[in-house]
Amino acid sequence: MPAVTLAGVSKRYADGAREAVSALQLSIGDGELLVLVGPSGCGKSTVLRMIAGLEEVSGGTIRIGDRIVNDVAPRERDIAMVFQNYALYPHMSVFENLAFGLRRRRIAAEEVERRVLAAADLLGLEGYLDRRPRALSGGERQRVALGRAMVREPRVFLFDEPLSNLDARLRVQMRAEIRRMHQRVRATMIYVTHDQVEAMTLGDRIAVMREGAIQQVADPLTLYARPVNEFVASFIGSPPINLFEARIAGGGALEAGGATLAAPAVARAALASRLGSMVRVGVRPENVHVAEAGENGLEARVEMCEPLGNEVLVHWQTPAGALIARVPGQISPAQGTRATLRLPPEKLHCFDPRTGTTIGAAE
Image (tube, rainbow, N blue to C red; front, side, top):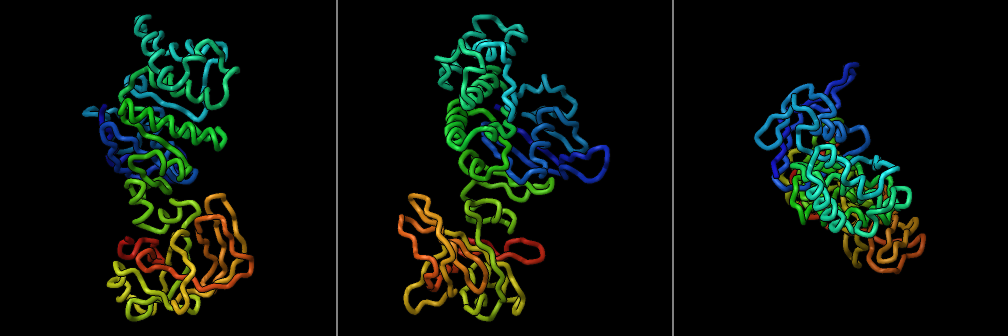
Protein backbone atom coordinates (compact mmCIF):
# COMPACT_ATOMS: atom_id res chain seq x y z
CA MET A 1 0.00 0.00 0.00
CA PRO A 2 1.31 3.49 -0.83
CA ALA A 3 2.19 6.35 1.46
CA VAL A 4 0.27 9.63 1.10
CA THR A 5 2.17 12.92 1.28
CA LEU A 6 0.74 16.44 1.43
CA ALA A 7 3.31 19.17 0.82
CA GLY A 8 2.23 22.77 1.44
CA VAL A 9 -1.39 21.95 0.57
CA SER A 10 -3.81 24.90 0.76
CA LYS A 11 -7.46 25.42 -0.05
CA ARG A 12 -8.97 28.82 -0.79
CA TYR A 13 -12.58 29.21 -1.81
CA ALA A 14 -13.79 31.72 -4.38
CA ASP A 15 -15.15 34.19 -1.82
CA GLY A 16 -11.56 34.60 -0.55
CA ALA A 17 -12.72 35.11 3.04
CA ARG A 18 -9.98 32.88 4.45
CA GLU A 19 -8.00 29.76 3.73
CA ALA A 20 -9.91 26.63 4.72
CA VAL A 21 -6.57 24.79 4.76
CA SER A 22 -3.24 26.60 5.05
CA ALA A 23 0.12 25.24 3.78
CA LEU A 24 -0.47 21.83 5.30
CA GLN A 25 2.46 19.41 5.63
CA LEU A 26 1.55 15.81 6.41
CA SER A 27 2.87 12.34 5.61
CA ILE A 28 0.85 9.16 6.10
CA GLY A 29 3.00 6.04 6.09
CA ASP A 30 2.50 2.90 4.04
CA GLY A 31 -0.15 0.82 5.84
CA GLU A 32 -0.72 3.44 8.56
CA LEU A 33 -4.09 4.42 10.04
CA LEU A 34 -3.90 8.17 10.61
CA VAL A 35 -6.77 10.10 12.19
CA LEU A 36 -7.47 13.76 11.42
CA VAL A 37 -9.30 15.25 14.39
CA GLY A 38 -10.47 18.72 15.30
CA PRO A 39 -13.56 20.85 15.93
CA SER A 40 -16.18 21.45 13.26
CA GLY A 41 -14.95 23.82 10.55
CA CYS A 42 -11.24 23.21 11.15
CA GLY A 43 -10.66 21.90 7.58
CA LYS A 44 -10.24 18.17 8.23
CA SER A 45 -12.97 17.03 5.82
CA THR A 46 -11.65 19.47 3.21
CA VAL A 47 -8.23 17.78 3.46
CA LEU A 48 -9.85 14.37 2.94
CA ARG A 49 -11.85 15.60 -0.05
CA MET A 50 -8.73 17.07 -1.66
CA ILE A 51 -6.95 13.70 -1.27
CA ALA A 52 -9.98 12.04 -2.88
CA GLY A 53 -10.05 14.57 -5.72
CA LEU A 54 -13.48 15.93 -4.78
CA GLU A 55 -12.02 19.37 -3.98
CA GLU A 56 -9.51 21.24 -6.11
CA VAL A 57 -6.15 22.01 -4.49
CA SER A 58 -5.36 25.75 -4.37
CA GLY A 59 -1.67 25.26 -3.61
CA GLY A 60 0.90 22.58 -2.85
CA THR A 61 0.99 18.95 -3.98
CA ILE A 62 -0.67 15.69 -3.00
CA ARG A 63 1.27 12.53 -3.68
CA ILE A 64 -0.09 8.97 -3.47
CA GLY A 65 2.86 6.63 -3.62
CA ASP A 66 5.30 8.16 -6.10
CA ARG A 67 2.56 9.86 -8.15
CA ILE A 68 1.43 13.49 -7.83
CA VAL A 69 -2.38 13.38 -8.12
CA ASN A 70 -3.39 17.07 -8.08
CA ASP A 71 -4.77 16.83 -11.62
CA VAL A 72 -5.77 13.14 -11.57
CA ALA A 73 -9.50 12.37 -11.72
CA PRO A 74 -10.99 10.83 -8.54
CA ARG A 75 -11.79 7.51 -10.23
CA GLU A 76 -8.14 7.17 -11.32
CA ARG A 77 -6.61 7.72 -7.86
CA ASP A 78 -7.39 4.17 -6.73
CA ILE A 79 -8.92 5.26 -3.43
CA ALA A 80 -12.16 4.27 -1.69
CA MET A 81 -14.12 6.69 0.48
CA VAL A 82 -16.64 5.88 3.21
CA PHE A 83 -18.99 8.77 4.03
CA GLN A 84 -21.10 9.70 7.03
CA ASN A 85 -24.14 8.97 4.85
CA TYR A 86 -24.09 5.28 3.94
CA ALA A 87 -25.49 6.01 0.44
CA LEU A 88 -26.67 2.42 -0.12
CA TYR A 89 -28.98 1.58 -3.00
CA PRO A 90 -32.31 0.82 -1.27
CA HIS A 91 -33.65 -1.43 -4.07
CA MET A 92 -30.56 -3.67 -4.08
CA SER A 93 -29.62 -6.52 -1.75
CA VAL A 94 -26.47 -6.36 0.36
CA PHE A 95 -24.70 -8.59 -2.17
CA GLU A 96 -25.73 -6.31 -5.04
CA ASN A 97 -24.67 -3.19 -3.14
CA LEU A 98 -21.25 -4.72 -2.53
CA ALA A 99 -20.90 -5.93 -6.11
CA PHE A 100 -22.27 -2.89 -7.95
CA GLY A 101 -19.04 -0.92 -8.28
CA LEU A 102 -17.07 -3.98 -9.36
CA ARG A 103 -19.60 -4.88 -12.04
CA ARG A 104 -19.47 -1.35 -13.42
CA ARG A 105 -15.72 -1.82 -13.81
CA ARG A 106 -16.44 -4.98 -15.82
CA ILE A 107 -14.61 -7.25 -13.38
CA ALA A 108 -15.21 -10.96 -14.03
CA ALA A 109 -18.19 -12.45 -12.19
CA GLU A 110 -16.04 -15.04 -10.40
CA GLU A 111 -13.74 -12.33 -9.06
CA VAL A 112 -16.72 -10.18 -8.00
CA GLU A 113 -18.16 -13.07 -6.01
CA ARG A 114 -14.79 -13.85 -4.42
CA ARG A 115 -14.29 -10.27 -3.25
CA VAL A 116 -17.85 -9.85 -1.99
CA LEU A 117 -17.81 -13.10 -0.02
CA ALA A 118 -14.38 -12.28 1.45
CA ALA A 119 -15.59 -8.85 2.61
CA ALA A 120 -18.82 -10.32 3.98
CA ASP A 121 -16.83 -12.89 5.96
CA LEU A 122 -14.50 -10.23 7.37
CA LEU A 123 -17.36 -7.94 8.40
CA GLY A 124 -19.81 -10.60 9.62
CA LEU A 125 -22.31 -10.00 6.81
CA GLU A 126 -22.60 -13.57 5.51
CA GLY A 127 -26.17 -13.94 6.83
CA TYR A 128 -27.31 -10.60 5.38
CA LEU A 129 -26.35 -10.85 1.71
CA ASP A 130 -29.96 -11.32 0.52
CA ARG A 131 -31.40 -8.52 2.63
CA ARG A 132 -32.09 -4.97 1.49
CA PRO A 133 -30.85 -1.93 3.45
CA ARG A 134 -34.24 -1.23 5.05
CA ALA A 135 -34.02 -4.62 6.81
CA LEU A 136 -30.65 -3.75 8.39
CA SER A 137 -29.74 -1.91 11.57
CA GLY A 138 -27.58 1.22 11.46
CA GLY A 139 -24.48 -0.74 12.38
CA GLU A 140 -25.16 -3.36 9.71
CA ARG A 141 -25.65 -0.66 7.08
CA GLN A 142 -22.35 0.90 8.10
CA ARG A 143 -20.65 -2.47 7.69
CA VAL A 144 -22.08 -2.73 4.19
CA ALA A 145 -20.65 0.72 3.40
CA LEU A 146 -17.27 -0.45 4.70
CA GLY A 147 -17.54 -3.63 2.65
CA ARG A 148 -18.33 -1.70 -0.50
CA ALA A 149 -15.05 0.16 -0.05
CA MET A 150 -13.14 -3.03 0.79
CA VAL A 151 -14.18 -5.03 -2.28
CA ARG A 152 -12.54 -2.46 -4.51
CA GLU A 153 -9.18 -3.37 -2.93
CA PRO A 154 -8.03 0.26 -3.22
CA ARG A 155 -4.58 1.62 -2.49
CA VAL A 156 -5.94 4.07 0.12
CA PHE A 157 -9.09 4.11 2.29
CA LEU A 158 -10.63 7.46 3.28
CA PHE A 159 -13.23 7.72 6.08
CA ASP A 160 -15.25 10.92 6.56
CA GLU A 161 -16.91 10.71 10.01
CA PRO A 162 -18.51 7.36 9.14
CA LEU A 163 -19.80 6.61 12.66
CA SER A 164 -21.38 9.92 13.64
CA ASN A 165 -24.92 8.73 12.85
CA LEU A 166 -24.67 5.69 15.13
CA ASP A 167 -25.61 5.46 18.80
CA ALA A 168 -22.87 5.19 21.43
CA ARG A 169 -22.91 1.38 21.67
CA LEU A 170 -22.74 0.89 17.90
CA ARG A 171 -19.91 3.42 17.62
CA VAL A 172 -17.84 1.33 20.03
CA GLN A 173 -18.58 -1.84 18.03
CA MET A 174 -17.77 -0.22 14.69
CA ARG A 175 -14.54 1.33 15.97
CA ALA A 176 -13.40 -2.15 16.88
CA GLU A 177 -14.55 -3.42 13.46
CA ILE A 178 -12.53 -0.78 11.59
CA ARG A 179 -9.48 -1.40 13.77
CA ARG A 180 -9.68 -5.16 13.13
CA MET A 181 -10.10 -4.55 9.41
CA HIS A 182 -6.99 -2.39 9.36
CA GLN A 183 -4.96 -4.99 11.23
CA ARG A 184 -5.98 -7.65 8.71
CA VAL A 185 -5.59 -5.80 5.42
CA ARG A 186 -2.83 -3.35 6.56
CA ALA A 187 -4.07 -0.76 4.08
CA THR A 188 -3.22 2.94 4.23
CA MET A 189 -6.20 4.63 5.92
CA ILE A 190 -7.03 8.25 6.69
CA TYR A 191 -9.92 8.75 9.09
CA VAL A 192 -11.65 12.07 9.84
CA THR A 193 -13.59 12.66 13.04
CA HIS A 194 -14.44 15.41 15.54
CA ASP A 195 -14.65 12.82 18.33
CA GLN A 196 -11.36 12.71 20.24
CA VAL A 197 -12.27 9.38 21.91
CA GLU A 198 -12.71 7.88 18.44
CA ALA A 199 -9.36 9.34 17.41
CA MET A 200 -7.52 8.01 20.47
CA THR A 201 -8.88 4.48 20.11
CA LEU A 202 -8.38 4.15 16.34
CA GLY A 203 -5.28 5.97 15.21
CA ASP A 204 -1.70 4.73 14.90
CA ARG A 205 -1.06 8.49 14.86
CA ILE A 206 -3.36 11.47 15.25
CA ALA A 207 -3.13 14.85 13.53
CA VAL A 208 -4.92 17.56 15.54
CA MET A 209 -6.24 20.41 13.38
CA ARG A 210 -7.43 23.90 14.21
CA GLU A 211 -8.50 26.63 11.77
CA GLY A 212 -6.97 24.93 8.75
CA ALA A 213 -3.59 24.18 10.34
CA ILE A 214 -2.12 21.13 12.02
CA GLN A 215 -1.26 21.71 15.67
CA GLN A 216 0.47 18.40 16.45
CA VAL A 217 0.94 14.95 14.90
CA ALA A 218 1.83 12.11 17.26
CA ASP A 219 0.72 8.76 18.62
CA PRO A 220 -2.24 8.90 21.06
CA LEU A 221 -0.20 8.55 24.26
CA THR A 222 2.25 11.29 23.24
CA LEU A 223 -0.60 13.67 22.42
CA TYR A 224 -2.15 13.03 25.81
CA ALA A 225 1.03 13.24 27.89
CA ARG A 226 3.06 15.82 25.94
CA PRO A 227 0.76 18.27 24.13
CA VAL A 228 2.57 21.05 22.30
CA ASN A 229 0.00 23.70 23.24
CA GLU A 230 -3.06 24.43 25.32
CA PHE A 231 -5.46 23.72 22.47
CA VAL A 232 -4.18 20.15 22.00
CA ALA A 233 -4.16 19.59 25.77
CA SER A 234 -7.77 20.78 26.03
CA PHE A 235 -9.06 18.95 22.96
CA ILE A 236 -7.52 15.57 23.75
CA GLY A 237 -8.82 13.89 26.89
CA SER A 238 -12.24 13.22 28.43
CA PRO A 239 -13.06 14.82 30.77
CA PRO A 240 -10.85 17.65 29.52
CA ILE A 241 -7.71 18.85 31.25
CA ASN A 242 -8.17 21.22 34.21
CA LEU A 243 -6.79 24.72 33.57
CA PHE A 244 -6.09 27.56 36.00
CA GLU A 245 -3.83 30.62 36.26
CA ALA A 246 -0.76 30.87 38.48
CA ARG A 247 1.95 33.41 39.17
CA ILE A 248 5.57 32.38 38.65
CA ALA A 249 7.49 32.66 41.92
CA GLY A 250 11.14 32.02 42.70
CA GLY A 251 12.69 28.64 43.38
CA GLY A 252 10.66 26.77 40.78
CA ALA A 253 7.33 27.49 42.46
CA LEU A 254 3.90 28.55 41.23
CA GLU A 255 1.44 30.55 43.31
CA ALA A 256 -2.25 29.87 42.71
CA GLY A 257 -5.33 30.32 44.88
CA GLY A 258 -3.25 31.16 47.95
CA ALA A 259 -1.21 27.95 47.63
CA THR A 260 2.38 27.37 46.57
CA LEU A 261 2.79 24.57 44.05
CA ALA A 262 6.01 23.06 42.72
CA ALA A 263 6.46 23.62 38.97
CA PRO A 264 7.35 20.71 36.67
CA ALA A 265 11.11 20.22 36.51
CA VAL A 266 11.20 20.37 32.71
CA ALA A 267 9.68 23.88 32.74
CA ARG A 268 11.62 25.47 35.62
CA ALA A 269 14.49 26.87 33.56
CA ALA A 270 12.07 28.60 31.16
CA LEU A 271 9.86 29.81 34.00
CA ALA A 272 12.83 31.31 35.85
CA SER A 273 13.15 34.02 33.20
CA ARG A 274 9.50 35.03 33.73
CA LEU A 275 9.42 35.67 37.48
CA GLY A 276 6.28 37.52 38.52
CA SER A 277 4.47 36.76 35.27
CA MET A 278 1.29 34.74 34.96
CA VAL A 279 1.18 31.28 33.42
CA ARG A 280 -1.63 28.89 32.52
CA VAL A 281 -1.37 25.55 34.32
CA GLY A 282 -3.03 22.31 33.25
CA VAL A 283 -3.49 19.05 35.14
CA ARG A 284 -5.36 15.92 34.03
CA PRO A 285 -8.31 14.82 36.23
CA GLU A 286 -6.59 11.54 37.18
CA ASN A 287 -3.67 13.55 38.58
CA VAL A 288 -5.74 15.55 41.09
CA HIS A 289 -5.41 13.83 44.49
CA VAL A 290 -6.50 14.49 48.06
CA ALA A 291 -3.37 15.41 50.03
CA GLU A 292 -2.14 13.62 53.11
CA ALA A 293 -2.07 15.52 56.40
CA GLY A 294 0.61 18.20 56.32
CA GLU A 295 1.02 18.22 52.53
CA ASN A 296 0.81 21.51 50.62
CA GLY A 297 -1.88 22.06 48.04
CA LEU A 298 -5.06 23.84 47.07
CA GLU A 299 -7.86 24.12 49.61
CA ALA A 300 -11.00 22.71 48.02
CA ARG A 301 -14.66 21.87 48.61
CA VAL A 302 -16.75 19.21 46.83
CA GLU A 303 -19.48 20.76 44.68
CA MET A 304 -20.86 17.58 43.11
CA CYS A 305 -19.95 14.03 42.08
CA GLU A 306 -20.65 12.07 38.92
CA PRO A 307 -20.64 8.30 39.55
CA LEU A 308 -19.72 6.41 36.37
CA GLY A 309 -19.71 2.85 37.70
CA ASN A 310 -16.03 2.00 37.82
CA GLU A 311 -14.99 5.56 38.69
CA VAL A 312 -16.30 8.85 40.04
CA LEU A 313 -15.72 12.36 38.70
CA VAL A 314 -15.45 14.69 41.68
CA HIS A 315 -16.02 18.39 40.99
CA TRP A 316 -13.97 20.52 43.39
CA GLN A 317 -14.22 24.27 43.89
CA THR A 318 -10.90 25.92 44.80
CA PRO A 319 -9.64 29.53 45.07
CA ALA A 320 -7.81 28.90 41.76
CA GLY A 321 -11.02 27.77 40.04
CA ALA A 322 -13.02 24.60 39.44
CA LEU A 323 -11.11 21.30 39.17
CA ILE A 324 -12.35 17.83 38.23
CA ALA A 325 -10.73 14.76 39.79
CA ARG A 326 -11.10 11.23 38.40
CA VAL A 327 -11.37 8.83 41.36
CA PRO A 328 -11.38 5.04 40.87
CA GLY A 329 -14.00 2.98 42.64
CA GLN A 330 -17.57 3.65 43.66
CA ILE A 331 -17.24 5.79 46.80
CA SER A 332 -18.18 9.45 46.38
CA PRO A 333 -17.26 12.15 48.89
CA ALA A 334 -20.28 14.01 50.23
CA GLN A 335 -21.18 17.41 48.83
CA GLY A 336 -19.51 20.14 50.87
CA THR A 337 -16.59 17.93 51.94
CA ARG A 338 -13.42 19.98 52.39
CA ALA A 339 -9.90 18.78 51.64
CA THR A 340 -6.49 19.87 50.39
CA LEU A 341 -5.69 18.85 46.81
CA ARG A 342 -2.21 17.69 45.82
CA LEU A 343 -1.11 18.29 42.22
CA PRO A 344 2.08 16.30 41.43
CA PRO A 345 4.55 18.71 39.80
CA GLU A 346 5.69 16.15 37.20
CA LYS A 347 2.10 15.93 35.97
CA LEU A 348 1.57 19.68 35.51
CA HIS A 349 1.61 21.36 32.10
CA CYS A 350 2.57 25.04 31.82
CA PHE A 351 1.31 27.13 28.90
CA ASP A 352 2.21 30.62 27.74
CA PRO A 353 -0.99 32.68 28.35
CA ARG A 354 -0.39 34.74 25.20
CA THR A 355 0.56 32.10 22.61
CA GLY A 356 -0.84 28.98 24.24
CA THR A 357 2.37 27.04 23.58
CA THR A 358 3.77 24.60 26.12
CA ILE A 359 6.57 25.91 28.30
CA GLY A 360 9.11 23.12 28.61
CA ALA A 361 7.85 19.59 27.92
CA ALA A 362 5.42 17.78 30.22
CA GLU A 363 6.44 14.29 31.23
